[in-house]
Image (cartoon, rainbow, N blue to C red; front, side):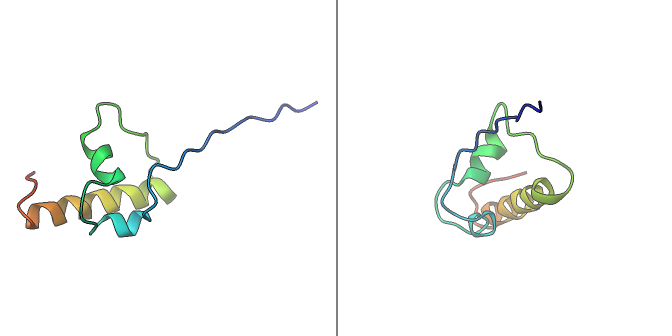
Length: 69
């Protein structure tokens, strides 16, 4: 008999990752950028997409004078 592994999934944002890059107000990407214990991200697929979006989000916030590197 094979045991099925259970996976829990929680929605943390109603905005798509791409939409969070230019969104007004705090986003899940912002929370991840400053989190003490951020979500572990893979090097490919969704993890790579999130890393790229976080980098572009940081650029947007820097352009607006809301963040610095």
